[in-house]
Image 1 (spheres, one colour):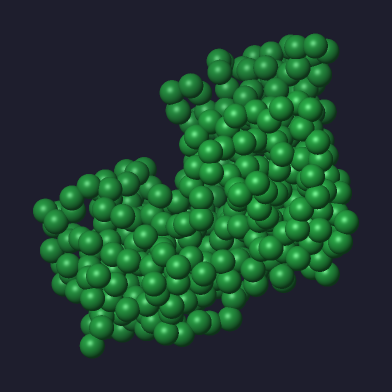
Image 2 (cartoon, rainbow, N blue to C red):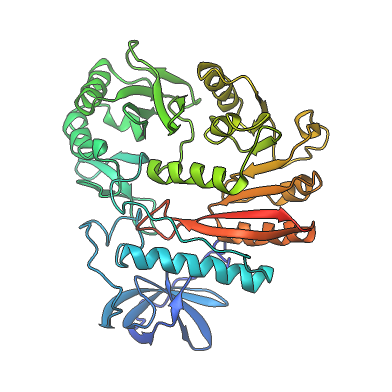
Length: 446
């Protein structure tokens, strides 16, 4: 990985630091332009490869500095005007100044470069990147709510760039269109409520034709505030839930039907507020089809699906294999996955709750005759897990990664255990951001 000094506290540049003119050579894995200044690497937000820009240093570190773009003197042909008028302030997107097709291409190159440089590995086959609609793709989001002390006005929006403070948002181009009026309506309904400071944020989670808003509160809301929540949810045709300080979830009203989505045409999954769903349903469908194509399951196979969630991959695979075993770290998700298996009348699944960062060798599910493994770990990857699953000598392992650095590290471990990286691609799960979703197929070396 390039520079992983995020946890170090930056020193503040001198207030009198003058703007500097620099040339940008390439893009970092975090989506920032890279230049060099006084023998140090300079990461420049808002800059693109092959540009000449004017920048201002905003943070200094021992080995590198950080800067913001002030002016573009010579623009890349891949630069575009950011379509969102909140882009300069909002911290949600960081690549709207780069045309989406080029952004996906650069992401692909960046992951391949990391694999080559740090794992000394190149895939035997690279598939075309899988693109997504660049806007209105996101079906889950956390929207902050805060009442300002100075004038008691209500701010509803996202965190500012490099800040914990909120910026007021009118509308968000990457959110599902069903959430288009969320910000406007929240300000409308909550601004006049005396206890609106009770709400710290709103979590939105959407299925195919249903969805929910969860209001995180610091204390029990008044009847008037609860009524405002109901009005907001009714206007958006969404369910309303309240989450307290202890994480308890209760519905605002009691006439709710199940929240559902289809990961594949033949499987219907129920979910609840707080559950994890892949944020981009278009790419989720493509990802499941890709997994089925690459792993090529048949009726003799035993699939082990690690970090299985609600059964997003487990249940579509269960229709193809002898047995599908899903393992997840949250018991509530395991119970939901079991219920989903039953409601889909799928009888060849087993679901377990386990800490996948610990020793799994003693677990009953790990003793099954596993022939293929699918894992979709969090950003931290699966460092303690890969050496253990490699010992099963499954013929294929499909690794879905949201962090190129973790994938690179875990690729080294899998190759050392006798696997080769046979196939690779990138999917545009998060358009207009620097986040990268990759898929790597590892097969036992002959």
